[in-house]
Length: 436
Image (cartoon, rainbow, N blue to C red; front, side, top):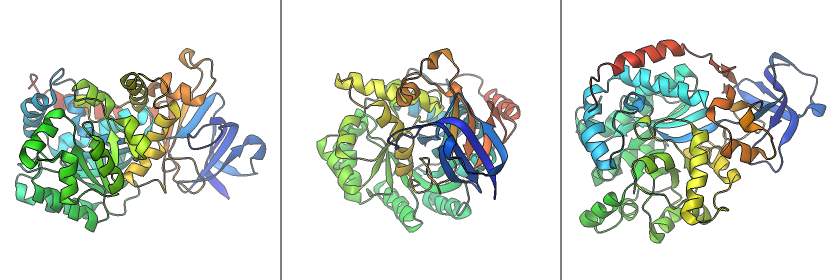
């Protein structure tokens, strides 16, 4: 049988493996990994395309557990501000004025390019006009959990808040059974959605077997407001509403006490931590050490470009590992292997797709990346996990394969015209004559 792709002579690394494979091969057919091992074990197979990968590290593609991709348009628009001022006085007004179907398509496509070029093969996205984001991801060839936003005031594409949940139902119905796109529900937060809205959104997610994303306990202000209004923390509030379970993804989860952590663990809810966004907005530092010690399933996300300002998960891993070492004054906290798991198989578990992607296993979807090891900052090469978290960057990724297809080769995106995409986003940005 002729295979679609064959990678040979690479150094294969997966943080779930006990040891890497040096001088190995990996075969791909019909979008799936069909075999891998040492070159000495390579069977007599032919392939439509063979990638000679000497001096290259191959690994599972990175998984961005939280993003608002279309916000690439707002990169650098409102910096150095507290979250609530940033959100209420800058981002929400900018979204009301500039978010459109066209904007979401092109700006999500630009985000897809940035993520592909820095090694991300799957993204969890939540925004408005999410049909256009999903289409952009599909056209770019990136795997996505695309979640339509729910909020209790007029939003782009949903001017009538009474239709906020029904619009998500229509979105989910349109994107069922797509090979790259998995539709989901993005309930913005407990402070922008009423209790009934949160429950209705969760009921829809349960009915459609979809992931339910919600911003949770991101700031001290949010926790204080929740206690004033409901007499409990945001986590306890959602627990009382009955929306915390194995399909709930709690984004940020910065301000948690011991009881909150226990509730999350017992409920089976998962967490997407976004360290650089939380740092930039001075929201705080998530209790990641405690989460992992309790066994909470945790992934890592970049958040959107308006609060990061890039989508490079290699940089995010580096920051995440170092931030928690200094927070705990312990250099052994959050090892390189642990943070790599968060950005690969951990992210897949958070998003409910670990059976099909997130690691290099026969029968899983062929979502993997290749990094060029021939660089001064990657020399010498002792331990792959150390190299990947503390030295490598997105710019070292040369080849990206998603669903068995070559999406980037020799740092050239093959799935769409990146130059045209950048022109379109630049055109849209010129409508913003001054910072909001």
